[in-house]
Image 1 (cartoon, rainbow, N blue to C red):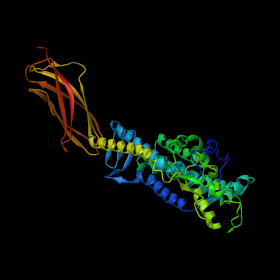
Image 2 (image 1 turned 135 degrees about the vertical axis):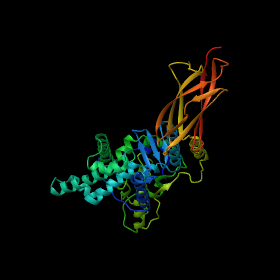
Image 3 (image 1 turned 180 degrees about the vertical axis):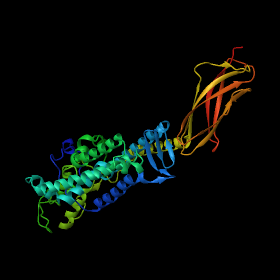
Length: 452
């Protein structure tokens, strides 16, 4: 295996320039990736179609500023949980990177998944990578126009359904799909679908590996997480060099096991030569491993000339794993703690700004309070308001309010003091109770009376 601590000039190399014609490769890692990608893409497209309690299970309603998630509604007041989830995902990614390098990029990153899907369509329409190269170099004619048109049309259709699948998280799917093809959606929705269609088409069809090499920030900083215990795709130079062609079944004494077939380069989505050492462009996808193992089988050599391995199999590297693992655990506990303490409704209490107090017809001192309430559930709820502080405080009128699912409502309540006040300014507390569940919130305020 090549060392991660070798000369930087070997560690960071430049990928092949120009268009990369990705050779289609089969093998255990490719089979695993395709099955995993099939599951991930299926989940991505089908999740918005799932119903739950008569509603769309997952819907980010930007107009109402609400995120519905399997019966739970999250509002801007709950966005802290989103921050926690992103932090948790980041630390998990760092931990996985510490263990297995850029396996996220190679197996689950949408850019890689859609690039390989586009390449699969290209191989079905244009033939092998050599056929595609020959087609691009040929003169324009009816055959070339037809193949190119069919390929780009297939790319655009895949991009369109990708965009519709993504927009299904923001627009109810029962109106999105039909509305798009009948042009009944709003101009804004139609425009966003077309925009994401174009983005998918350009990224997966044209930019491809350039996103991984020059745009994605993760590609630039992920190498700082590697150490001698990180499992990476690497070439066993001690076994493979000196490389050179030979007949099958032969083993020239002057040559290593590498037959210099260049299949590892031809199947690489980012067009690098893994035999040149560790390179930041490598996405740890394992396609070169499958290609090399296939060649080793043909020549009767042991597999593993290119393989997943760490520089030091025996070194545990506990410190790095413990740090990321502890960060993941702490973030997870904080997230669970916040979720457990989350209230199903919100209440803000504001005093009347027009007057500190007033005297009613009965001679009682009254203070007015404005209650801004939000029902964060997906069911109608009734709430009761109770005032606490000192003897003689009463709420004038009905203190029960019913809110529809997700409804914002503002109520004005008047609190009257039915006896003489002992002091000018007195702290009080409102208790807002969910009549259906007994859940309650406390809100502090102040009651003002006449000076003695």
